[in-house]
Length: 203
Image (cartoon, rainbow, N blue to C red; front, top):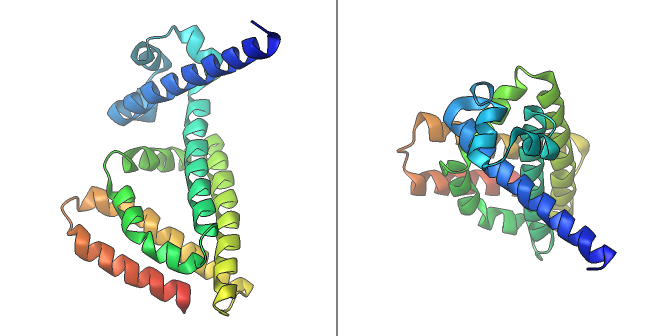
């Protein structure tokens, strides 16, 4: 095996172990919460020794930071997809139904709420979350400016600041509705969300 092949095999093995740890950690965090879930519990769920866990992630905070980065990557991929469309604003409107359903899906929102709760009391995680939010906001704002310029709509600083925050708040708030009202009428809710997003984007 060549040096390059060995390096590639090592990288793939490391990535596989990291994914295995993250899958186990997600299960433990959702079952017990961040504070109650121990590294020992995570190592048992992952089928690895604690030493292997610490080789992948130096601490539980590092695992949480990895989940945050995964979310950033998913958002960035979505933004790139929107940017590839001829009409960015209409593409965002067309995606509202998928976005709302994704935020309502019990398989997706609990971990994000756990991260938000941890950020409210853990300065290190708060810093990670705020950095991720800043990067996402910058990318989203750039996308919206390009979309609005195509329609000759206002792109001044105050307009864009309010628009970005309102749209992010709308979708982040869906997670709380999923907790407080899991039986909501998704079809009518999605229809209203689509109209709100359309109004905000094109006003």
